[in-house]
Length: 297
Image 1: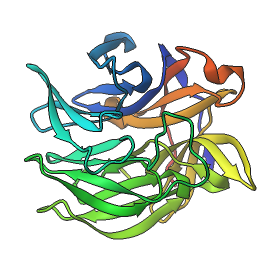
Image 2 (image 1 turned 180 degrees about the horizontal axis):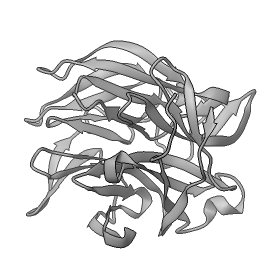
Image 3 (image 1 turned 90 degrees about the horizontal axis):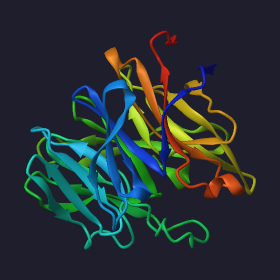
Image 4 (image 1 turned 180 degrees about the vertical axis):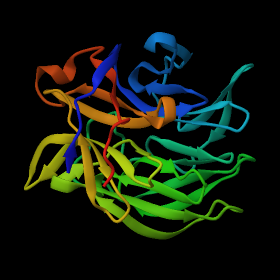
């Protein structure tokens, strides 16, 4: 496994940065607990795109016309944000018992994850029950796309729209499915790769070699929770080839590849989850590291 350089900080003062997406030459990301969506503008300045003061904003995705879809976690709805403002896109309360989490969008279809318990109450005990991935069709129709998922979290879709990748957090693995191009139905569920050293995957993204980059904020083994590796790259076949370590006391929540020729990895980070730093307000950051000279093996 090749260790890359530690990332540099480009945006500070965030609460819980997550769900970064590179689209149309810019990075858009959520600050979940602030209920905000940001777009990274010129000179790496974060500009507020939308704000929901009464909810947490999770996963993001874009429609073909450039409109932005956003997950309203507690309301269990999808929001559509366009030039004319924000409107409700889909109500998922009938398919989600607790809260929504992340989302991947392609060809007008949205796949939405849910952890299977209320992650915002801090009252989870033991392993959560298996749960579902929800599919929202371009016409607004909703259905269960996949069941028996272990805390499905970050998701990504291959550029050709034929494969969905899902981080199953409590199973410590990346799972993938084939996507039917006509119906959006998922099939051929299989293991893409397991995280090393008990790593728990969070947000993920893909590179142009078919590898998955996964943020791993924490790891769990032998009854002990400890720091995760940072961001790791899992190649097709399951080998872990690269790792981006973070500064001491930082955790990676999600990542996205963007910039000129896909040469930058953007990483959403927060302080450690235990001790005084875990309760520091506005301590979230957006960081980046260059992939331009990365050696692919």
